[in-house]
Length: 93
Image 1 (cartoon, rainbow, N blue to C red):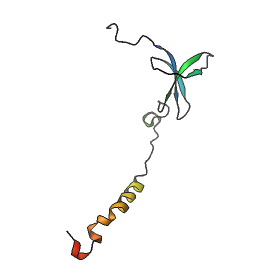
Image 2 (cartoon, one colour):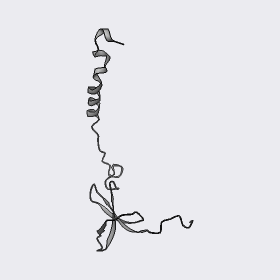
Image 3 (cartoon, rainbow, N blue to C red):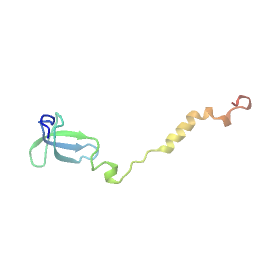
Image 4 (cartoon, rainbow, N blue to C red):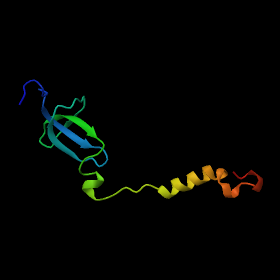
């Protein structure tokens, strides 16, 4: 390996998934000011993450559905005034 290109501050860090409170211990050089008491009684730096393998739809198999029908209805209501069917006969393009 080429010397001098890798961080030298690797240490044990706790990563905590904030969506389901799952936490795991791993080595990282991620900067953080927070710490947490781990299961072994030691205190480690804490990195909070939004998504982990315990909450990501690819790994869990649970997809989050978005209300696309509501978006389509909202779009149609907003632009229905430009619909050519509803325009008076003398103003058709």
